[in-house]
Length: 326
Image (cartoon, rainbow, N blue to C red; front, side):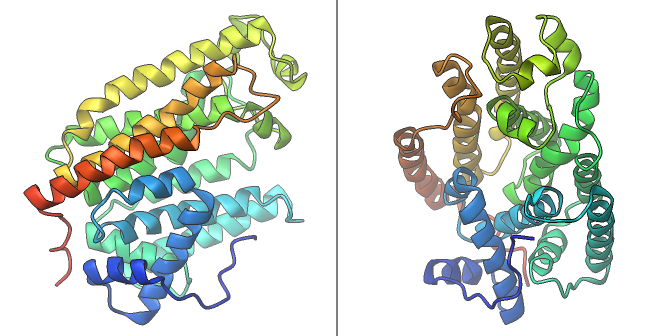
């Protein structure tokens, strides 16, 4: 697996301040949080940029959740591994079972999972969200296509929606409806990625678009594998983009249900992740010849004003999250 968990790591000075703000003092635990932060910074740059809009005391916990997801994803998708799908499924199941057992005992010897265990216990995150995530990761080892959107949703719920549900307690919601809206946003993020990554997913032998909806436009999996953005494929992708935008719009009220110090982080993530489909449109739905990415100038244009608003919110409302540890 390409995620290196053997070498010692030491927090940067800025991350030291974040750990101090979160009152995380145990040296082993601090090292585990630093591993998760580095995974986030290396593999989830847009996500990481959004986390910087959170109060420092909250950032380590969000990094930990990302670290868990990335660690599992590497078991499934490490293209350099010689393991068979069956062997990976066994590895993933054993790793997941060990993690859930560690959550119950409150400690893990795994250098990544210890921070995740601590995050779960600090914020009382339901264990079933992790079970659902691991289920979807296992599906990736055996399922290569989805006939209907309902079939795809089973996978998306566990691979993306529950990531949002895991985060909501850290973001301090004002009511239970925030969880439903977080589900919508997590699904929108994942579907936007699926639209952008059609070519890359084909390289892994997978299609994450509902086959029956593609068929409405006369598009089959074989057509996608030709890797030519035909008018029919463009029309089919436009339908998928419309779903992303519908879910994004439906998620917006949920952001106002979060603690004011958390809102700018999630709003920035919404704009940047859902903005992927804007870039797909700009390149005329050609998802085969180049990868649609949100330009850095756009990221900075979103992050700069959001940073200023986030700082003002912390000063006015308080940062939240500082009372979670004795």
